[in-house]
Length: 188
Image 1 (cartoon, rainbow, N blue to C red):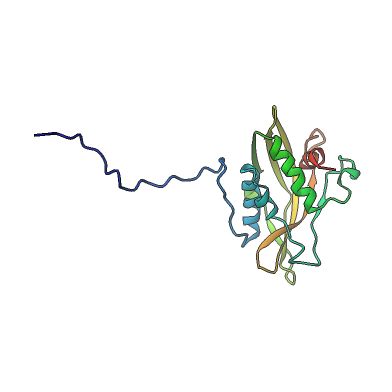
Image 2: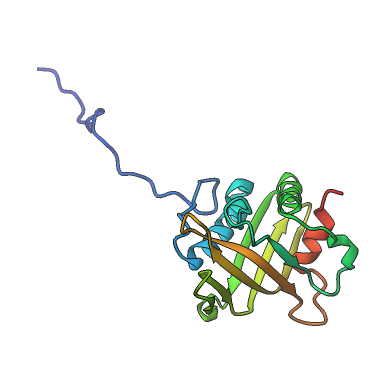
């Protein structure tokens, strides 16, 4: 009599693996709320996904009267942001992603971010000022942190998008804000 070692069924199914958020999986939820936009923005940075990042911003094709506006930290020379557009937003990020080995991003004290209505006629809201920390590993890790405030609007597809972004330092000692990153990696 022959004995075969027992084994599992080679044609059986295995348990599904949960995707890791820090790997290049594609986490992007339909922005049916302003909170989802903030989550999508975070994952787009971590995943180094320019397309998902840009999907967080208003599309002037949908809303003719609203265009994107970035108000940089006052410590950055204003001419670095003259004419800043969504194209500049995508270009700086492509430059960062090309040069970065890794990225982490966190909303500091995210439980305290509040979102309040601006106008019911336009379905627009604004965030309270919130602290962020963006760590980017180039040759060495550089940390960008500051205070941001955003305004969002519901577009014609009833999906939320950022149309206004204000960035400020959270202390006088802080020289690296998100504005610094954008200014340093903008394509002119």
